[in-house]
Length: 343
Ligand code: KG4
Ligand code: ZN
Image 1: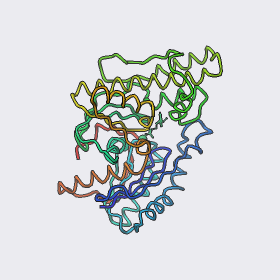
Image 2: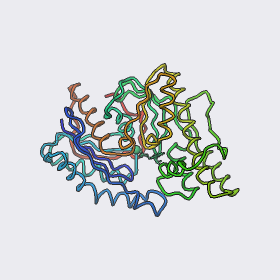
Image 3: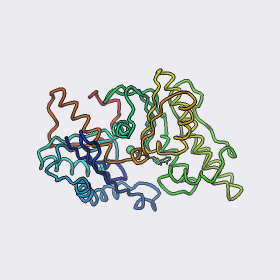
Image 4: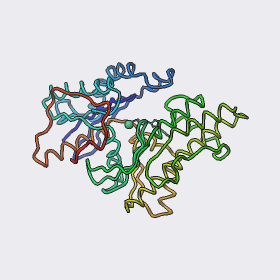
């Protein structure tokens, strides 16, 4: 089964072709970062309009790269939510129209399920069950994953997501958007520990996170004045260290609580190099398996949507259930992952 995946939930237009037998055949991505940069964040209306401009040319490119004709596509998968309503509608409308014209099954995918399952696309895929640390721009969650659609929430952020903490701290430091990569870059030349930032909930006995105090601490520190030229880099390094410390500690606590030995990281923040290094150290020390997919699979992309859609369709097919046909559709800007059923 050849599945065309379409991702338009936020500021990246992603398209990919996944083959059940041969794996990922081709993928293409257009990032809108340059367009939103001057506004310091994503402008939803501009995002929607750009998805309209990019989507069909990207789909054409992916088909050409894979040497596949549109008529060979067996199924369409697209991000149904969560995300920006207008941006989601572009992907959904194109996917449903293609699916209708080709008369192939067309399935809406949960964006976070895409992130969660994307490590299975990597060269050395993890096996179920595992603990997943899902860290994107809007979500920070620890989940126990027993199979496709079998997700138990172990803990989550009670306020800001880790990605949001990176993005808001970056803004306060006068860095561009998205903040995670910008902080990580500046942190390379800085030293953590010079400034003391809080590690909220580091020792709490639950598996929840809280990051909103971090941006307040960063704002307070900046308001007091940064003493010298190296101070911004030192503060960036401390922001990164504070977020990574908490993510690592809670992930290890989740492994202890579940008795599982495999940790999988997913979502944009999981591209962070320092986080990967720290988890690799922990895995060597404690004999744990830590799966860090290639950074390109961590951030938003079409491949994870094609893949998650293909797994869902296969499960329906195996169960003898009818496959979803293209037709009337809606998007779900807000859509809790726990609302998903097992495949
Ligand atoms: O998963 P994602 O690409 O989009 C969402 O679904 O939200 O995640 C975006 C988030 C942003 O907050 C961005 O700053 C963060 O991931 N991010 C990073 C890095 N690359 C992206 N954070 C820290 N270090 C990175 N290298
Ligand atoms: Zn995402």
